[in-house]
Structures are given as C-alpha cells and as structure tokens.
Image (cartoon, rainbow, N blue to C red; front, side, top):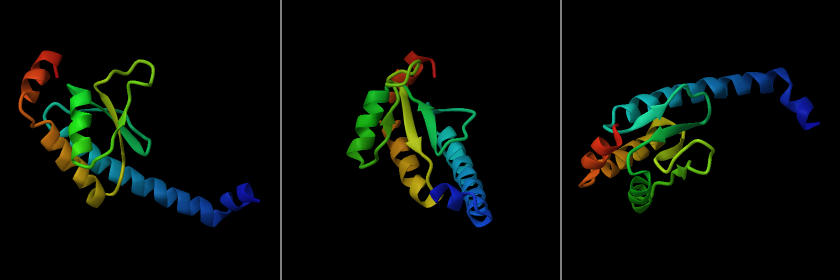
Amino acid sequence: EAVRACCEPAAVAQAARAATELAGHRGWLVDALGALPGVQVCLPAAAPFLLLRVPDGPGVRARLREAGVAVRRADTFPGLTVDHLRVAVRPAAQAAALVRALASATAAPGYGARMQRSGS
C-alpha cells in the first residue's frame, strides 16, 4: 500500500519539488562554505548532506560542538580522514548558523598555521 501511494502522480510531483528545493539549499550551502578559508567542499554533491575537508577536523568538530552545532565525523568511512566532516543540507535560514559557527571555528587561534601545514 505504501509503495502504491508513493507512486501516485501527486506523490511523484511532491518528491520532484522537494528534490529541486534541496538542490537550491545545497547550492547556497556549497557557495557559503566554499567561501570560508581552509574549508574544502568535496564535489560533486547530490545528497542531502555535504562532505567537507578542514585542517584539524577534530579541533573544528570540538569548537562546533561547543557552539551547539552538530556535524558528523567522516573518518569512519573508508578512505576518509579525521579532517573530513559531513554536514546536513538545510534551508539557508538554518544553515547560516552552521556557516557562522564554522567561520568562527576556523578563525580560532593557530588554525591558519594548521591550514598551511596541511596544504589547504
């Protein structure tokens, strides 16, 4: 019954609208995060999350946590390191808090030196 309901024209149209909306949110977030020094957004991206690479990933995660912002560590995925973080794509009004917190976390004393050592 659930599969049948999800295949109805109205449900398919709703899913298409949601996908288009998510793509817009993702584009905004890619631009905003990509403008932050030392933050590398791993592209291409088509999911409801983004993969980031930042120098001193554990330190950045700790500073974000202190600011009340949750991000997922990504070193549990094969091939990724402690410097990879996964962030959810949300509407700009919500995602702006992540961008501000990440800007602050990457502006912490000594971050620039770590950025140069890591080659970012």
